[in-house]
Length: 215
Ligand SMILES: O=C(O)[C@@H](CO)OP(=O)(O)O
Image (cartoon, rainbow, N blue to C red):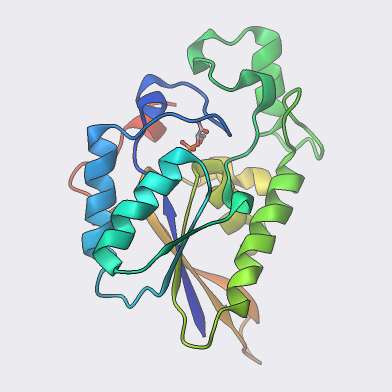
């Protein structure tokens, strides 16, 4: 059975300021760096063989810190990027106009192809995240990969594995540097394929980020 660990990156400057990142980027705060070290401490004895990360700066930095603890190399995969939030990227969440807020809401209310202008739909996000996860099945037998990605992207992946719509990610709290795990199992009795073992564990963090609570 393949076990895949899923980690959201550490807190960033814009997470703390409540600004929308998407595929734009901001650096980890000191707290974010500390969170990533705590993930490293938590997973160093788990036998992680590969660290595969979104190619954005905040995830790469988080991955490097975890890789230092695990002693494995970091592989970048652009399929693990955050949802492209188009024209709203870099904006402060509290300054959106009513029209802009309606674009954002399309993503969370189930409009099938809802997207922010110049952005990506949840369906497109789901397809590329599942494609990245599926690639883990091609790793050598005995591998135990850890993927570093983003809040909406990982929430969408976990929700859709559970058979929920992609926008159900809004009901799943995946804080910065939370750890989730999905396993690929073959079972005649239980569901075959991907199953969710853990979602959003923050018990290894001394101070979970507040950004999700502030929304
Ligand atoms: O892009 C963002 O602003 C947030 C949205 O949840 O994602 P992350 O901080 O995980 O990249």
